[in-house]
Image: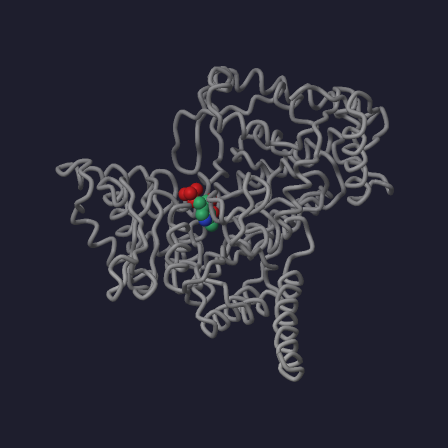
Length: 561
Ligand SMILES: Cc1ncc(COP(=O)(O)O)c(C=O)c1O
Protein backbone atom coordinates (compact mmCIF):
# COMPACT_ATOMS: atom_id res chain seq x y z
CA UNK A 1 0.00 0.00 0.00
CA UNK A 2 1.37 3.43 -0.93
CA UNK A 3 1.98 5.94 1.87
CA UNK A 4 -0.80 8.40 0.86
CA UNK A 5 -3.23 5.52 0.60
CA UNK A 6 -2.16 4.26 4.01
CA UNK A 7 -2.69 7.72 5.57
CA UNK A 8 -6.06 8.08 3.92
CA UNK A 9 -7.16 4.64 5.16
CA UNK A 10 -5.91 5.48 8.68
CA UNK A 11 -7.85 8.72 8.64
CA UNK A 12 -11.01 6.91 7.63
CA UNK A 13 -10.51 4.36 10.41
CA UNK A 14 -9.81 7.11 12.94
CA UNK A 15 -12.91 9.03 11.90
CA UNK A 16 -14.97 5.87 12.21
CA UNK A 17 -13.59 5.13 15.68
CA UNK A 18 -14.16 8.76 16.74
CA UNK A 19 -17.82 8.57 15.69
CA UNK A 20 -18.23 5.26 17.54
CA UNK A 21 -16.63 6.67 20.68
CA UNK A 22 -18.77 9.80 20.46
CA UNK A 23 -22.05 7.89 20.16
CA UNK A 24 -20.97 5.55 22.99
CA UNK A 25 -20.18 8.55 25.22
CA UNK A 26 -23.47 10.14 24.25
CA UNK A 27 -25.25 7.00 25.36
CA UNK A 28 -23.43 6.97 28.71
CA UNK A 29 -24.25 10.63 29.23
CA UNK A 30 -27.94 9.90 28.60
CA UNK A 31 -28.20 7.45 31.49
CA UNK A 32 -29.72 8.70 34.71
CA UNK A 33 -27.13 9.01 37.46
CA UNK A 34 -29.03 6.70 39.83
CA UNK A 35 -28.72 2.93 40.06
CA UNK A 36 -32.14 2.73 38.37
CA UNK A 37 -30.50 4.30 35.35
CA UNK A 38 -27.73 1.69 35.27
CA UNK A 39 -29.40 -1.67 34.89
CA UNK A 40 -26.28 -3.79 34.89
CA UNK A 41 -24.78 -2.06 37.91
CA UNK A 42 -28.09 -2.29 39.77
CA UNK A 43 -28.23 -6.05 39.16
CA UNK A 44 -24.66 -6.46 40.42
CA UNK A 45 -25.39 -4.34 43.48
CA UNK A 46 -28.59 -6.29 44.20
CA UNK A 47 -26.64 -9.55 44.09
CA UNK A 48 -24.31 -8.21 46.79
CA UNK A 49 -26.98 -7.10 49.26
CA UNK A 50 -26.81 -9.54 52.18
CA UNK A 51 -29.71 -10.68 54.24
CA UNK A 52 -29.86 -9.49 57.83
CA UNK A 53 -32.68 -8.45 60.05
CA UNK A 54 -33.41 -6.65 63.30
CA UNK A 55 -34.13 -8.50 66.47
CA UNK A 56 -37.22 -7.24 68.21
CA UNK A 57 -35.30 -4.83 70.42
CA UNK A 58 -33.37 -3.28 67.53
CA UNK A 59 -36.53 -3.21 65.46
CA UNK A 60 -37.75 -0.19 67.42
CA UNK A 61 -34.51 1.75 67.45
CA UNK A 62 -33.04 1.25 64.00
CA UNK A 63 -32.57 5.03 63.95
CA UNK A 64 -30.93 5.14 67.41
CA UNK A 65 -34.01 6.68 69.01
CA UNK A 66 -33.82 6.96 72.82
CA UNK A 67 -35.30 4.21 74.98
CA UNK A 68 -38.50 6.07 75.87
CA UNK A 69 -39.32 6.57 72.18
CA UNK A 70 -38.55 2.91 71.44
CA UNK A 71 -40.91 1.93 74.29
CA UNK A 72 -43.68 4.11 72.85
CA UNK A 73 -43.22 2.54 69.45
CA UNK A 74 -43.30 -0.94 70.96
CA UNK A 75 -46.52 -0.22 72.82
CA UNK A 76 -48.08 1.19 69.65
CA UNK A 77 -46.90 -1.80 67.64
CA UNK A 78 -48.40 -4.24 70.15
CA UNK A 79 -51.69 -2.36 70.25
CA UNK A 80 -51.89 -2.40 66.45
CA UNK A 81 -50.94 -6.10 66.32
CA UNK A 82 -53.74 -6.86 68.80
CA UNK A 83 -56.15 -4.95 66.57
CA UNK A 84 -55.08 -7.08 63.60
CA UNK A 85 -55.46 -10.30 65.60
CA UNK A 86 -58.97 -9.48 66.73
CA UNK A 87 -60.33 -7.78 63.61
CA UNK A 88 -58.73 -9.71 60.75
CA UNK A 89 -58.67 -13.24 62.20
CA UNK A 90 -60.67 -15.17 59.58
CA UNK A 91 -58.97 -13.38 56.68
CA UNK A 92 -55.55 -14.04 58.18
CA UNK A 93 -56.39 -17.72 58.80
CA UNK A 94 -57.38 -18.25 55.18
CA UNK A 95 -54.26 -16.39 54.00
CA UNK A 96 -52.06 -18.53 56.24
CA UNK A 97 -53.50 -21.70 54.71
CA UNK A 98 -52.33 -20.79 51.21
CA UNK A 99 -49.31 -18.69 52.12
CA UNK A 100 -46.80 -21.42 51.25
CA UNK A 101 -48.57 -22.63 48.13
CA UNK A 102 -49.11 -19.42 46.17
CA UNK A 103 -45.75 -18.14 44.97
CA UNK A 104 -47.14 -14.72 44.13
CA UNK A 105 -48.43 -14.33 47.67
CA UNK A 106 -45.13 -15.42 49.19
CA UNK A 107 -43.40 -12.77 47.11
CA UNK A 108 -45.78 -9.90 47.82
CA UNK A 109 -46.06 -10.57 51.54
CA UNK A 110 -42.27 -10.66 51.82
CA UNK A 111 -41.73 -7.39 49.98
CA UNK A 112 -44.19 -5.10 51.71
CA UNK A 113 -41.58 -3.45 53.92
CA UNK A 114 -37.75 -3.20 53.89
CA UNK A 115 -36.37 -6.70 54.39
CA UNK A 116 -34.65 -5.90 57.70
CA UNK A 117 -38.09 -5.47 59.29
CA UNK A 118 -40.06 -7.93 57.21
CA UNK A 119 -40.15 -11.05 59.39
CA UNK A 120 -41.35 -9.30 62.55
CA UNK A 121 -43.96 -7.39 60.56
CA UNK A 122 -45.18 -10.56 58.83
CA UNK A 123 -45.55 -12.30 62.16
CA UNK A 124 -47.62 -9.54 63.73
CA UNK A 125 -49.58 -8.00 60.89
CA UNK A 126 -51.16 -10.66 58.77
CA UNK A 127 -52.12 -8.46 55.88
CA UNK A 128 -54.84 -10.78 54.63
CA UNK A 129 -54.92 -11.76 51.00
CA UNK A 130 -58.63 -12.50 50.73
CA UNK A 131 -61.71 -10.40 50.15
CA UNK A 132 -65.33 -11.47 50.07
CA UNK A 133 -67.12 -8.69 48.18
CA UNK A 134 -67.03 -5.20 46.72
CA UNK A 135 -69.61 -2.45 46.47
CA UNK A 136 -69.47 1.26 45.67
CA UNK A 137 -65.96 2.36 46.55
CA UNK A 138 -65.48 -0.28 49.22
CA UNK A 139 -64.32 -3.87 49.56
CA UNK A 140 -65.19 -6.27 52.40
CA UNK A 141 -62.90 -8.94 53.84
CA UNK A 142 -63.74 -12.37 55.26
CA UNK A 143 -64.24 -10.89 58.74
CA UNK A 144 -66.86 -8.45 57.47
CA UNK A 145 -64.57 -5.39 57.66
CA UNK A 146 -65.37 -2.79 55.04
CA UNK A 147 -62.47 -0.85 53.59
CA UNK A 148 -62.38 2.12 51.26
CA UNK A 149 -60.57 0.73 48.27
CA UNK A 150 -57.37 2.58 47.41
CA UNK A 151 -55.84 -0.32 45.49
CA UNK A 152 -57.77 0.48 42.32
CA UNK A 153 -57.15 -3.18 41.42
CA UNK A 154 -53.76 -2.25 39.96
CA UNK A 155 -55.39 0.55 38.01
CA UNK A 156 -58.14 -1.54 36.41
CA UNK A 157 -60.85 0.07 38.51
CA UNK A 158 -61.47 3.45 36.89
CA UNK A 159 -65.26 3.64 37.28
CA UNK A 160 -66.08 1.64 40.41
CA UNK A 161 -66.52 -2.09 40.89
CA UNK A 162 -70.28 -2.08 40.24
CA UNK A 163 -69.61 -0.66 36.78
CA UNK A 164 -67.32 -3.61 35.97
CA UNK A 165 -69.70 -6.17 37.44
CA UNK A 166 -72.30 -4.85 35.02
CA UNK A 167 -69.91 -4.89 32.05
CA UNK A 168 -69.02 -8.52 32.76
CA UNK A 169 -72.62 -9.64 33.37
CA UNK A 170 -74.14 -7.83 30.37
CA UNK A 171 -71.18 -8.70 28.15
CA UNK A 172 -71.44 -12.39 29.07
CA UNK A 173 -75.15 -12.40 28.21
CA UNK A 174 -74.38 -10.76 24.90
CA UNK A 175 -71.92 -13.46 23.80
CA UNK A 176 -73.52 -16.44 25.59
CA UNK A 177 -74.92 -18.02 22.43
CA UNK A 178 -71.43 -18.34 20.97
CA UNK A 179 -69.80 -19.16 24.27
CA UNK A 180 -66.04 -19.78 24.45
CA UNK A 181 -65.49 -20.50 20.76
CA UNK A 182 -62.04 -19.27 19.76
CA UNK A 183 -60.51 -18.42 16.42
CA UNK A 184 -63.64 -16.86 14.92
CA UNK A 185 -64.78 -13.46 16.19
CA UNK A 186 -68.03 -12.61 17.91
CA UNK A 187 -69.72 -9.70 16.07
CA UNK A 188 -69.21 -7.35 19.05
CA UNK A 189 -65.54 -7.38 18.11
CA UNK A 190 -66.28 -5.25 15.03
CA UNK A 191 -67.75 -2.51 17.23
CA UNK A 192 -64.77 -2.71 19.60
CA UNK A 193 -62.32 -2.32 16.75
CA UNK A 194 -64.19 0.66 15.31
CA UNK A 195 -64.30 2.41 18.71
CA UNK A 196 -60.65 1.67 19.47
CA UNK A 197 -59.63 3.12 16.13
CA UNK A 198 -61.64 6.23 16.90
CA UNK A 199 -60.26 6.61 20.42
CA UNK A 200 -56.64 5.99 19.47
CA UNK A 201 -56.77 7.79 16.12
CA UNK A 202 -54.83 4.83 14.71
CA UNK A 203 -55.56 2.44 11.84
CA UNK A 204 -55.40 -1.11 13.16
CA UNK A 205 -55.97 -3.06 16.34
CA UNK A 206 -54.67 -6.33 17.75
CA UNK A 207 -55.95 -8.10 20.85
CA UNK A 208 -53.80 -9.82 23.46
CA UNK A 209 -54.22 -11.29 26.89
CA UNK A 210 -52.28 -8.85 29.01
CA UNK A 211 -50.61 -5.47 28.88
CA UNK A 212 -47.22 -7.18 28.87
CA UNK A 213 -48.13 -9.05 25.69
CA UNK A 214 -49.42 -5.93 23.96
CA UNK A 215 -46.09 -4.21 24.69
CA UNK A 216 -44.16 -7.26 23.43
CA UNK A 217 -46.10 -7.15 20.18
CA UNK A 218 -45.59 -3.41 19.74
CA UNK A 219 -41.83 -3.74 20.13
CA UNK A 220 -41.64 -6.83 17.91
CA UNK A 221 -43.48 -5.03 15.12
CA UNK A 222 -41.33 -1.92 15.50
CA UNK A 223 -38.21 -4.07 15.11
CA UNK A 224 -39.68 -5.86 12.11
CA UNK A 225 -40.57 -2.70 10.24
CA UNK A 226 -37.52 -0.62 11.05
CA UNK A 227 -35.13 -3.58 10.84
CA UNK A 228 -33.37 -2.19 13.90
CA UNK A 229 -32.79 -4.02 17.15
CA UNK A 230 -32.87 -1.64 20.07
CA UNK A 231 -35.74 -0.34 22.09
CA UNK A 232 -35.49 2.75 24.25
CA UNK A 233 -37.30 2.92 27.55
CA UNK A 234 -37.00 5.63 30.16
CA UNK A 235 -35.41 5.18 33.53
CA UNK A 236 -37.85 3.77 36.11
CA UNK A 237 -40.70 3.14 33.67
CA UNK A 238 -42.71 -0.07 34.01
CA UNK A 239 -43.94 -1.77 30.86
CA UNK A 240 -44.81 -5.23 32.18
CA UNK A 241 -42.56 -8.09 33.10
CA UNK A 242 -41.18 -9.16 29.72
CA UNK A 243 -37.36 -9.33 29.86
CA UNK A 244 -36.59 -6.67 27.23
CA UNK A 245 -38.53 -3.99 29.10
CA UNK A 246 -37.16 -4.96 32.48
CA UNK A 247 -33.41 -4.79 32.16
CA UNK A 248 -32.61 -4.18 35.82
CA UNK A 249 -33.29 -5.93 39.11
CA UNK A 250 -35.97 -8.59 38.74
CA UNK A 251 -34.77 -10.10 35.48
CA UNK A 252 -32.13 -12.86 35.68
CA UNK A 253 -30.86 -11.98 32.19
CA UNK A 254 -29.36 -8.75 30.91
CA UNK A 255 -31.54 -7.10 28.27
CA UNK A 256 -28.92 -6.50 25.62
CA UNK A 257 -31.08 -4.74 23.09
CA UNK A 258 -32.53 -2.19 25.50
CA UNK A 259 -31.30 1.34 26.13
CA UNK A 260 -32.54 2.90 29.35
CA UNK A 261 -32.29 6.67 29.00
CA UNK A 262 -32.85 9.60 31.29
CA UNK A 263 -36.45 10.79 31.14
CA UNK A 264 -37.21 14.42 30.35
CA UNK A 265 -33.61 15.18 29.49
CA UNK A 266 -32.03 16.57 26.33
CA UNK A 267 -29.26 13.97 26.48
CA UNK A 268 -31.82 11.29 25.60
CA UNK A 269 -32.93 13.30 22.57
CA UNK A 270 -29.32 13.49 21.39
CA UNK A 271 -29.07 9.70 21.51
CA UNK A 272 -32.29 9.33 19.54
CA UNK A 273 -31.07 11.86 17.02
CA UNK A 274 -27.74 10.19 16.40
CA UNK A 275 -28.01 6.40 16.70
CA UNK A 276 -29.13 4.20 13.83
CA UNK A 277 -30.01 1.09 15.80
CA UNK A 278 -33.14 2.31 17.60
CA UNK A 279 -36.42 0.75 16.52
CA UNK A 280 -38.79 2.33 19.02
CA UNK A 281 -39.23 4.49 22.08
CA UNK A 282 -41.56 3.29 24.82
CA UNK A 283 -43.24 5.91 26.96
CA UNK A 284 -45.26 5.19 30.07
CA UNK A 285 -46.98 8.53 30.79
CA UNK A 286 -47.40 7.57 34.45
CA UNK A 287 -43.72 8.49 34.81
CA UNK A 288 -44.79 12.12 34.57
CA UNK A 289 -45.49 11.84 38.30
CA UNK A 290 -42.00 10.61 39.17
CA UNK A 291 -39.62 10.82 36.18
CA UNK A 292 -36.60 8.53 36.41
CA UNK A 293 -37.82 6.74 39.54
CA UNK A 294 -39.27 3.24 39.67
CA UNK A 295 -42.84 2.72 40.75
CA UNK A 296 -42.78 3.67 44.44
CA UNK A 297 -43.26 0.76 46.84
CA UNK A 298 -42.87 0.60 50.60
CA UNK A 299 -40.36 -2.27 50.45
CA UNK A 300 -37.75 0.26 49.27
CA UNK A 301 -38.89 2.99 51.63
CA UNK A 302 -35.61 3.00 53.52
CA UNK A 303 -35.68 6.71 54.31
CA UNK A 304 -37.92 9.65 53.38
CA UNK A 305 -36.34 10.24 49.99
CA UNK A 306 -39.47 9.42 47.96
CA UNK A 307 -40.25 12.30 45.63
CA UNK A 308 -43.07 13.02 43.22
CA UNK A 309 -44.27 16.07 41.37
CA UNK A 310 -46.49 16.36 38.32
CA UNK A 311 -46.12 19.16 35.80
CA UNK A 312 -48.52 18.56 32.91
CA UNK A 313 -47.17 21.30 30.66
CA UNK A 314 -43.55 20.23 31.12
CA UNK A 315 -44.38 16.61 30.35
CA UNK A 316 -46.44 17.56 27.30
CA UNK A 317 -43.52 19.65 26.02
CA UNK A 318 -41.22 16.68 26.54
CA UNK A 319 -43.54 14.37 24.59
CA UNK A 320 -43.64 16.88 21.75
CA UNK A 321 -39.85 16.83 21.56
CA UNK A 322 -39.86 13.04 21.55
CA UNK A 323 -42.47 13.08 18.80
CA UNK A 324 -40.30 15.37 16.68
CA UNK A 325 -37.11 13.36 17.01
CA UNK A 326 -38.89 10.05 16.40
CA UNK A 327 -40.49 11.44 13.25
CA UNK A 328 -37.16 12.80 12.02
CA UNK A 329 -35.35 9.51 12.67
CA UNK A 330 -38.12 7.14 11.63
CA UNK A 331 -38.28 5.68 15.14
CA UNK A 332 -41.61 4.20 16.23
CA UNK A 333 -43.05 6.18 19.13
CA UNK A 334 -45.10 3.90 21.39
CA UNK A 335 -47.27 5.21 24.22
CA UNK A 336 -47.84 2.49 26.76
CA UNK A 337 -51.23 3.53 28.13
CA UNK A 338 -51.93 0.23 29.85
CA UNK A 339 -52.09 2.10 33.16
CA UNK A 340 -53.22 5.61 32.36
CA UNK A 341 -55.48 5.02 29.35
CA UNK A 342 -59.06 6.14 30.15
CA UNK A 343 -58.01 7.35 33.58
CA UNK A 344 -56.81 10.80 32.52
CA UNK A 345 -59.14 11.48 29.60
CA UNK A 346 -61.58 9.67 27.35
CA UNK A 347 -58.99 9.77 24.59
CA UNK A 348 -56.24 8.60 26.93
CA UNK A 349 -52.78 10.13 27.34
CA UNK A 350 -52.61 11.14 23.67
CA UNK A 351 -55.57 13.46 24.22
CA UNK A 352 -54.53 14.52 27.71
CA UNK A 353 -51.03 15.62 26.67
CA UNK A 354 -51.98 16.57 23.11
CA UNK A 355 -49.35 14.40 21.42
CA UNK A 356 -49.93 11.52 18.98
CA UNK A 357 -47.99 8.26 19.00
CA UNK A 358 -47.40 5.71 16.21
CA UNK A 359 -48.60 2.88 18.41
CA UNK A 360 -50.56 2.82 21.66
CA UNK A 361 -51.02 -0.07 24.07
CA UNK A 362 -54.08 -0.32 26.30
CA UNK A 363 -55.03 -2.89 28.91
CA UNK A 364 -56.27 -3.14 32.48
CA UNK A 365 -59.62 -1.32 32.45
CA UNK A 366 -60.50 -1.58 28.77
CA UNK A 367 -62.11 -5.02 28.86
CA UNK A 368 -64.58 -3.98 31.54
CA UNK A 369 -62.81 -5.96 34.26
CA UNK A 370 -61.59 -8.98 32.29
CA UNK A 371 -57.93 -9.63 31.39
CA UNK A 372 -56.70 -8.01 28.20
CA UNK A 373 -54.01 -6.20 26.27
CA UNK A 374 -54.68 -4.12 23.16
CA UNK A 375 -52.34 -2.68 20.61
CA UNK A 376 -53.42 0.07 18.21
CA UNK A 377 -51.08 1.31 15.54
CA UNK A 378 -50.55 2.92 12.18
CA UNK A 379 -51.17 0.45 9.35
CA UNK A 380 -47.59 0.59 8.12
CA UNK A 381 -46.31 -0.58 11.51
CA UNK A 382 -49.02 -3.16 12.25
CA UNK A 383 -48.66 -5.32 9.16
CA UNK A 384 -47.21 -8.75 9.94
CA UNK A 385 -46.05 -9.73 6.45
CA UNK A 386 -44.44 -8.22 3.39
CA UNK A 387 -46.12 -8.23 0.00
CA UNK A 388 -42.81 -8.67 -1.80
CA UNK A 389 -41.23 -11.28 0.53
CA UNK A 390 -43.90 -13.79 1.56
CA UNK A 391 -41.63 -15.80 3.86
CA UNK A 392 -40.55 -12.75 5.87
CA UNK A 393 -43.29 -12.51 8.49
CA UNK A 394 -43.66 -11.14 12.01
CA UNK A 395 -45.47 -13.89 13.83
CA UNK A 396 -47.90 -13.22 16.65
CA UNK A 397 -50.86 -15.33 17.69
CA UNK A 398 -52.41 -16.27 21.01
CA UNK A 399 -55.01 -18.90 21.89
CA UNK A 400 -57.23 -16.58 23.87
CA UNK A 401 -56.86 -13.41 21.77
CA UNK A 402 -60.22 -11.73 21.21
CA UNK A 403 -61.96 -14.20 23.53
CA UNK A 404 -65.73 -13.72 23.11
CA UNK A 405 -66.34 -13.01 26.80
CA UNK A 406 -63.54 -10.44 26.89
CA UNK A 407 -64.89 -8.86 23.73
CA UNK A 408 -68.40 -8.81 25.22
CA UNK A 409 -67.26 -7.06 28.35
CA UNK A 410 -65.11 -4.65 26.32
CA UNK A 411 -68.15 -3.84 24.20
CA UNK A 412 -70.10 -2.90 27.33
CA UNK A 413 -67.19 -0.83 28.60
CA UNK A 414 -66.78 1.08 25.35
CA UNK A 415 -70.52 1.69 25.04
CA UNK A 416 -70.71 3.06 28.56
CA UNK A 417 -67.84 5.47 27.81
CA UNK A 418 -70.27 7.31 25.56
CA UNK A 419 -72.99 7.73 28.17
CA UNK A 420 -73.62 11.00 29.99
CA UNK A 421 -72.87 9.79 33.53
CA UNK A 422 -69.45 8.51 32.45
CA UNK A 423 -68.66 11.59 30.38
CA UNK A 424 -69.60 13.72 33.39
CA UNK A 425 -66.89 12.03 35.45
CA UNK A 426 -64.26 13.51 33.16
CA UNK A 427 -65.52 17.04 33.52
CA UNK A 428 -63.08 19.02 35.70
CA UNK A 429 -61.41 15.74 36.56
CA UNK A 430 -57.98 17.14 37.39
CA UNK A 431 -59.39 20.12 39.25
CA UNK A 432 -61.45 17.74 41.41
CA UNK A 433 -58.56 15.44 42.30
CA UNK A 434 -56.00 18.24 42.66
CA UNK A 435 -58.43 20.03 44.97
CA UNK A 436 -58.88 16.92 47.09
CA UNK A 437 -55.13 16.40 47.32
CA UNK A 438 -54.54 20.05 48.25
CA UNK A 439 -57.23 19.97 50.95
CA UNK A 440 -55.80 16.83 52.48
CA UNK A 441 -52.28 18.25 52.39
CA UNK A 442 -53.48 21.40 54.14
CA UNK A 443 -55.05 19.32 56.92
CA UNK A 444 -51.90 17.25 57.38
CA UNK A 445 -49.78 20.37 57.45
CA UNK A 446 -52.03 22.15 59.93
CA UNK A 447 -51.76 19.18 62.25
CA UNK A 448 -47.97 19.31 61.84
CA UNK A 449 -47.89 15.75 60.54
CA UNK A 450 -44.89 14.73 58.38
CA UNK A 451 -46.90 13.33 55.50
CA UNK A 452 -48.10 14.82 52.20
CA UNK A 453 -49.65 13.42 49.07
CA UNK A 454 -48.68 14.00 45.44
CA UNK A 455 -50.92 13.15 42.53
CA UNK A 456 -51.36 12.74 38.84
CA UNK A 457 -55.12 13.17 38.74
CA UNK A 458 -56.58 10.13 40.59
CA UNK A 459 -53.20 8.36 40.95
CA UNK A 460 -51.62 9.31 44.24
CA UNK A 461 -48.46 8.63 46.17
CA UNK A 462 -47.59 9.47 49.75
CA UNK A 463 -44.39 11.37 50.46
CA UNK A 464 -42.74 11.94 53.81
CA UNK A 465 -41.41 15.27 54.95
CA UNK A 466 -39.30 14.17 57.93
CA UNK A 467 -36.36 11.75 57.66
CA UNK A 468 -37.43 8.40 59.05
CA UNK A 469 -36.74 4.70 58.80
CA UNK A 470 -40.32 3.77 59.65
CA UNK A 471 -42.55 5.37 57.03
CA UNK A 472 -43.60 1.93 55.77
CA UNK A 473 -45.42 1.37 59.10
CA UNK A 474 -48.10 3.79 57.86
CA UNK A 475 -49.63 1.15 55.57
CA UNK A 476 -50.56 -0.90 58.68
CA UNK A 477 -52.12 2.09 60.46
CA UNK A 478 -54.07 2.91 57.29
CA UNK A 479 -55.42 -0.62 57.05
CA UNK A 480 -56.47 -0.55 60.69
CA UNK A 481 -58.30 2.69 59.87
CA UNK A 482 -60.28 0.92 57.16
CA UNK A 483 -58.31 1.78 54.03
CA UNK A 484 -57.31 -1.01 51.64
CA UNK A 485 -53.91 -0.56 49.99
CA UNK A 486 -52.19 -2.82 47.49
CA UNK A 487 -48.95 -4.63 48.28
CA UNK A 488 -46.86 -1.57 47.37
CA UNK A 489 -48.37 0.15 50.39
CA UNK A 490 -48.27 3.93 50.51
CA UNK A 491 -46.33 4.08 47.22
CA UNK A 492 -49.50 4.15 45.20
CA UNK A 493 -53.09 4.98 46.07
CA UNK A 494 -55.45 4.61 43.14
CA UNK A 495 -58.92 6.13 43.36
CA UNK A 496 -61.79 5.17 41.12
CA UNK A 497 -63.49 8.17 39.54
CA UNK A 498 -66.82 7.39 41.24
CA UNK A 499 -65.51 8.59 44.63
CA UNK A 500 -68.04 11.18 45.76
CA UNK A 501 -67.05 14.14 47.94
CA UNK A 502 -68.51 12.30 50.96
CA UNK A 503 -66.54 9.14 50.17
CA UNK A 504 -63.40 11.16 49.79
CA UNK A 505 -64.03 13.09 53.01
CA UNK A 506 -64.27 9.76 54.86
CA UNK A 507 -60.95 8.63 53.34
CA UNK A 508 -59.28 11.93 54.21
CA UNK A 509 -60.51 11.69 57.83
CA UNK A 510 -59.10 8.19 58.09
CA UNK A 511 -55.76 9.17 56.59
CA UNK A 512 -55.37 12.10 59.00
CA UNK A 513 -56.36 9.93 61.93
CA UNK A 514 -54.01 7.06 60.95
CA UNK A 515 -51.09 9.43 60.41
CA UNK A 516 -51.89 11.07 63.76
CA UNK A 517 -51.93 7.69 65.53
CA UNK A 518 -48.60 6.70 64.02
CA UNK A 519 -47.14 10.06 64.96
CA UNK A 520 -48.43 9.64 68.51
CA UNK A 521 -46.69 6.28 68.73
CA UNK A 522 -43.34 7.94 68.12
CA UNK A 523 -42.38 6.47 64.74
CA UNK A 524 -41.47 9.90 63.37
CA UNK A 525 -39.11 10.81 66.19
CA UNK A 526 -36.58 13.23 64.78
CA UNK A 527 -33.16 14.51 65.69
CA UNK A 528 -30.79 16.89 63.88
CA UNK A 529 -28.45 14.01 63.07
CA UNK A 530 -31.24 11.91 61.55
CA UNK A 531 -31.06 13.02 57.93
CA UNK A 532 -31.97 10.92 54.90
CA UNK A 533 -28.31 10.79 54.01
CA UNK A 534 -27.38 9.58 57.49
CA UNK A 535 -30.05 6.88 57.28
CA UNK A 536 -28.78 5.63 53.92
CA UNK A 537 -25.20 5.62 55.19
CA UNK A 538 -26.18 3.64 58.22
CA UNK A 539 -28.03 1.03 56.16
CA UNK A 540 -25.05 0.74 53.84
CA UNK A 541 -22.76 0.26 56.85
CA UNK A 542 -25.04 -2.46 58.19
CA UNK A 543 -24.99 -4.21 54.83
CA UNK A 544 -21.21 -4.09 54.64
CA UNK A 545 -21.00 -5.38 58.18
CA UNK A 546 -23.44 -8.21 57.47
CA UNK A 547 -21.57 -9.06 54.28
CA UNK A 548 -18.15 -9.05 55.90
CA UNK A 549 -19.01 -10.77 59.17
CA UNK A 550 -22.26 -12.65 58.79
CA UNK A 551 -22.08 -14.09 62.28
CA UNK A 552 -21.67 -10.86 64.22
CA UNK A 553 -23.21 -7.41 63.96
CA UNK A 554 -24.49 -5.23 66.73
CA UNK A 555 -27.76 -3.97 65.23
CA UNK A 556 -28.36 -6.88 62.98
CA UNK A 557 -29.00 -10.50 63.55
CA UNK A 558 -28.36 -12.69 60.53
CA UNK A 559 -30.82 -15.53 60.11
CA UNK A 560 -31.30 -18.09 57.48
CA UNK A 561 -33.50 -17.03 54.58
C1 LIG B 1 -47.67 0.86 31.78
C2 LIG B 1 -47.86 -0.63 31.91
N1 LIG B 1 -47.53 -1.41 30.88
C3 LIG B 1 -47.69 -2.74 30.91
C4 LIG B 1 -48.18 -3.35 32.05
C5 LIG B 1 -48.34 -4.83 32.09
O1 LIG B 1 -49.68 -5.18 32.04
P1 LIG B 1 -50.15 -6.61 32.56
O2 LIG B 1 -49.93 -6.63 34.03
O3 LIG B 1 -51.59 -6.69 32.15
O4 LIG B 1 -49.29 -7.61 31.85
C6 LIG B 1 -48.51 -2.58 33.16
C7 LIG B 1 -49.01 -3.20 34.39
O5 LIG B 1 -49.05 -2.65 35.44
C8 LIG B 1 -48.35 -1.18 33.08
O6 LIG B 1 -48.65 -0.39 34.12
